[in-house]
Image (cartoon, rainbow, N blue to C red; front, side, top):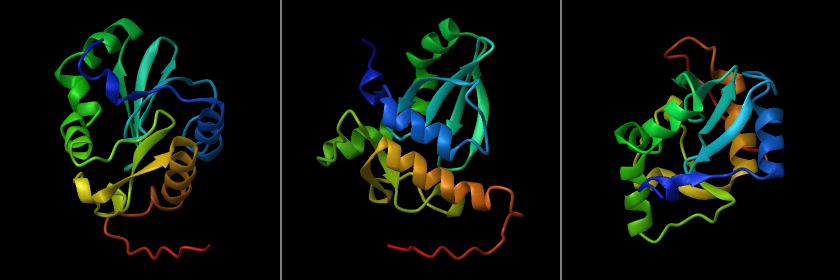
Amino acid sequence: MNEHERFIRVAGEAASASLYKNWGWFFDETYELLVVSVFGDPFLMKDGRVYWLNTGTADFEVAADSVEEFNTLLAGDQGAIWLLSDVAEKLEAGGLIPSSAECYSYIKLPILGGEYEVANFYPLPLDEHFAITGDILSQIKFLPDGQAVNIKVVE
């Protein structure tokens, strides 16, 4: 077990279904879900390449050209960056530890100015995290930088 493995989640059926349903505007089911970071960022595979989706910004990039390369990178310094290990350790030290079916989700998304700081996270089931982030980002991702947005929370 490498030092970063505690910051990895294996998504169950509900979380996987929520990911594809709520992020289907961004990628389709030809991308195979591998694992999810403790911050709800999925790593997906297609045609042998591994991709990383930042659910706080909707940035999607190639993480590695193979699963073997991905596993090597994940065990090293790059893994600490992808998994936000330093922030996760601070959250753990403060007693905020999500269950294996939860992730740290954002109070304010980074794309809206939220910071990668302890005070901006709370534990949320993965399926709910994918639903919330996918819905919000599908509505704002392609707006021009600096565009004002109003978010209305409906209960």
